[in-house]
Image (cartoon, rainbow, N blue to C red; front, top):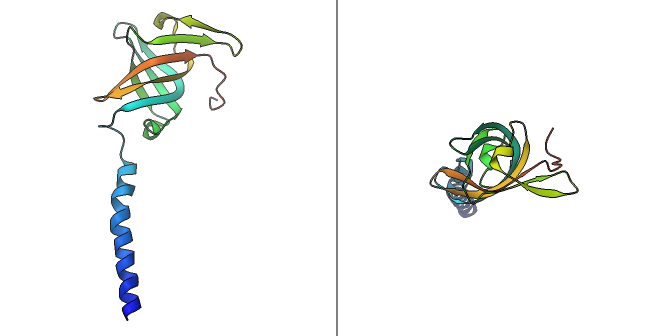
Length: 129
């Protein structure tokens, strides 16, 4: 009887301690902040607002809950843009971006705003169809 009580207590403690961890992992990072990295395709561009909408295909833990969905990414004057053909890389501008471009990017998420620091167009990305 003593063993059964200890076993039940251990099981209850395991469930109680694991539940918050599992629940936290299922929630999107709405209030989180940090550095993001993602790979995707541009689905829309707003040159006036200097934003791009990107369908996320892969990314770090910050974007994991957005895989297969779109994110609106804000550009800033300090955002760096590159184009690569797999051999050479050259600087480009926001105006050179096109809907359908495969991109990889890094940036910051703060207060619910995704801001790009670097955008690279044209890399041979194995996760893109």
